[in-house]
Picture 1 (tube, rainbow, N blue to C red):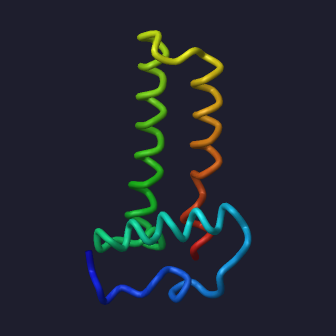
Picture 2 (picture 1 turned 45 degrees about the vertical axis):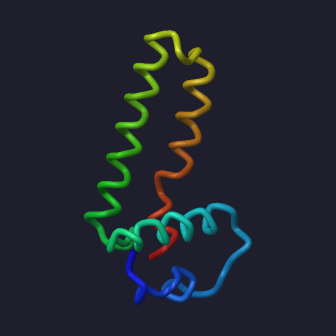
Picture 3 (picture 1 turned 60 degrees about the vertical axis):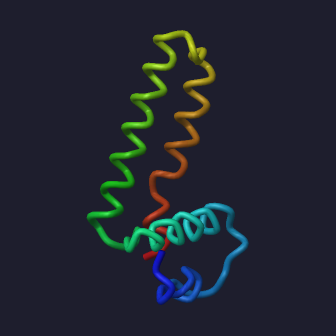
Length: 90
């Protein structure tokens, strides 16, 4: 963890009450812990690819009977809802 990294709200402006923006700030803090930023196009792309891979995991879980179709769809919708978090930080 880098102690010299400022908090995301210091990087990207004022704090907001928007839940997606707050989530973006939380994710950005986590990325900063690894020396990365979701404002970087490469990191943002890797983030989106990771979400797609998680969807594949959910599909496999459905095939194996771990998740029902409706459960997989609901979780996939959550993933789709956070695909554009990097754009909220720009």
